[in-house]
Image 1 (tube, rainbow, N blue to C red):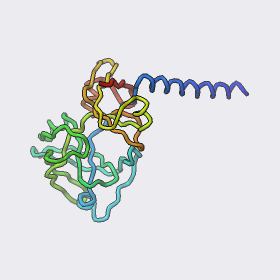
Image 2 (tube, rainbow, N blue to C red; image 1 turned 90 degrees about the vertical axis):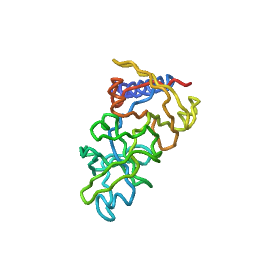
Image 3 (tube, one colour; image 1 turned 180 degrees about the vertical axis):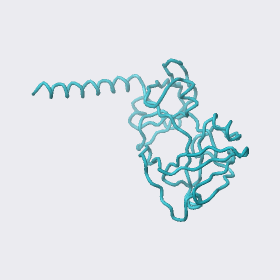
Image 4 (cartoon, one colour; image 1 turned 90 degrees about the horizontal axis):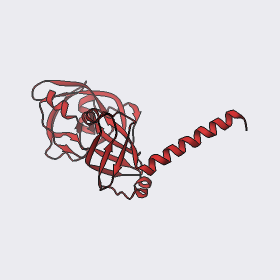
Length: 214
């Protein structure tokens, strides 16, 4: 074995041990979600043209991907937010996820909800290159949530639908209460928060936080 090979093996072992320690400590990565929109097939046709197919830009978890396409959101004040990323694939219902800061621009009051729970949520106008839709509901502020693999959840005694607290050790130490856990075999181990929460806690994509079970 050459010195070069030994160095490569040593680095690989160190990385594995580091990952093991993070797992034992219950530490997980943070993913900061920017404002975005999920579209139904019907609304995609209206906004981009009949039969239009989204162009994949970046693969995400859970079979989702960030598309090249963007739309403009317009609130009752007629103020708008442009270049809002579309996420694919298409869904049964259109859903817009924004931050509380965005609501001050759009002059809307969406509820904080888990993804998919859009009944009775906020209204908004969405403008695309080929058309415009008026959403009678579908605008939410996504709740803080954690994606876990079944293996990770089992090791740590956590179940799908559980709520945990999350400790953030940063320049602005924070404790997030009642963070929803979602477990699925196509997930990565990652906590998702919006830009407001990330800024308030002084954290960014890839930073580590720690799950505290109730």
